[in-house]
Length: 196
Image 1 (spheres, rainbow, N blue to C red):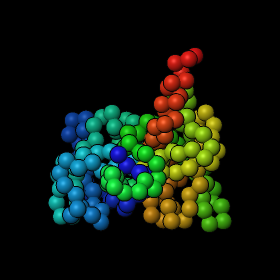
Image 2: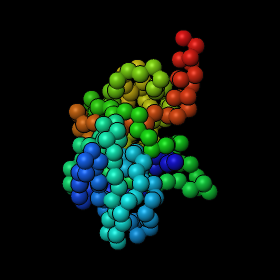
Image 3: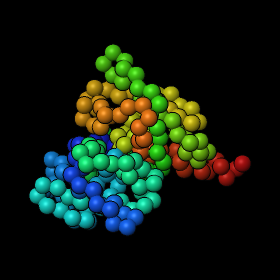
């Protein structure tokens, strides 16, 4: 489980295909603090460390993960938002993030707003996946607050700190992003769907 508060940017050092799987080798500021079999979120996708050295570590994404997320589009040198799993004795600064991406969204508009940025994201309509204004959404692993909400999209506001310390600074119109919708909203939507 995660909070959506990004700890660092990781850099893709190597990509290796093995049948339908993709092994991703990543460097970041804290590989010496990690261990084999630990869960780490990469652009919001929870992946298990399978190989580790002093400089980098490797995780494996299976076909479903590659189809559901933007990890299949990675290139060597790309930056990933990285977060280690939360500790139970710490503060929950973001919101409850499972590291299970629901679907990909597409950046449709980026607006600079006098020191901050608005990102507009579109996605396929799904009655069991909703956003609400001032609700929580996770984009590429970042816990954010929804500004405007529609059945097929939403917008979020990004402050300068988030812009500089995540890969939001690289996003442009047409880019795919990983979306994890709020778990409480998903339960409510599924519950309400049973009454239709």
